[in-house]
Image 1 (tube, rainbow, N blue to C red):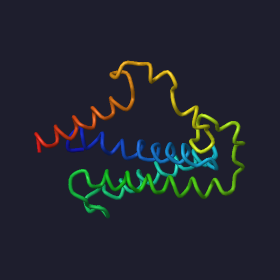
Image 2: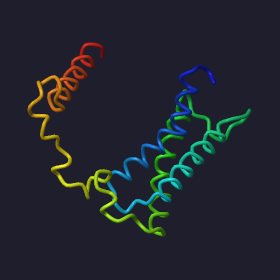
Image 3: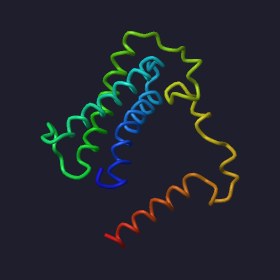
Image 4: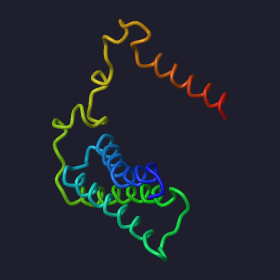
Length: 146
């Protein structure tokens, strides 16, 4: 590796991308099963590692500049994770909806998604004002330092 960032980006592509795919799929699709989650994680990680291995050696099969290999490996890991998870889910039994309340958005009552006590908090401890402030700061910093 040329530097620490190349190394970290490669590791993030191996592990974070498939983990994020599993997290999103499990949070928004109630049919997702535990077996599908693990299968997707393993397949996505393996796909990223195999793709990265093709970039090694004297004459690599994949020769992308900079961190291109890590970015493509991360994208591949994400897609493979989703595909494998969907296929494995179709062959496994999903958990009942009662067990998914609080974990999957579609089966969680809307009242559970909102904190009734948040309205009583000062503005600097509430979600929407802080999110708006952060978004504003990001826009300002991008304009100033672009």
